[in-house]
Image 1 (cartoon, rainbow, N blue to C red):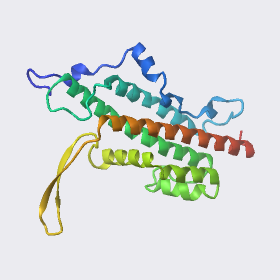
Image 2: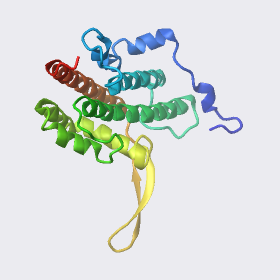
Image 3: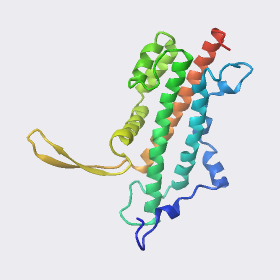
Length: 238
């Protein structure tokens, strides 16, 4: 890719200009995800630093905008569904798209867990942030504190799009990128080595699942913020 007489991937990395950024974000739901509760200091004057996870979530989701803009900066309707074999500009653009999608999927899926940290902190569930089974503990403990949030978590866990996005994130973290094809071997019950090939996730599927997952995250944030406001007001924490 970087050898003599070949296209250089680094020469094609260019962040979209201001006009293009505005165009990309014009109808992007990702920029509407945040906890507005932290903005109203008159109603919630003690939200910081006691509930620092609320601020952390807003900062984290804002950082996702960088990869989101990059993703759509590389993406267009002529982008192929799979990585072409030839060494061309469109091949490099597809590679850059895949790499950016990997980062964004990881960050968006992590955002769901950060909301879990918000719930843990606000409702004082006492779960350690680095607990390996954090989400399982969260669902179990919030059930006795807030039935609405419990039902929200259960509904998200059963959502097909969320399951798919979560699998992509887990593959990226522990296995192999689902956005590029791979070849591997398995040993059958008779001890015979079998060669297998796994196709990559096509471009349109990457985009569609991502946007649906962003919508789920947005609603998750809205629903939990409503419950948090009611909880803080009821308990006169603010």
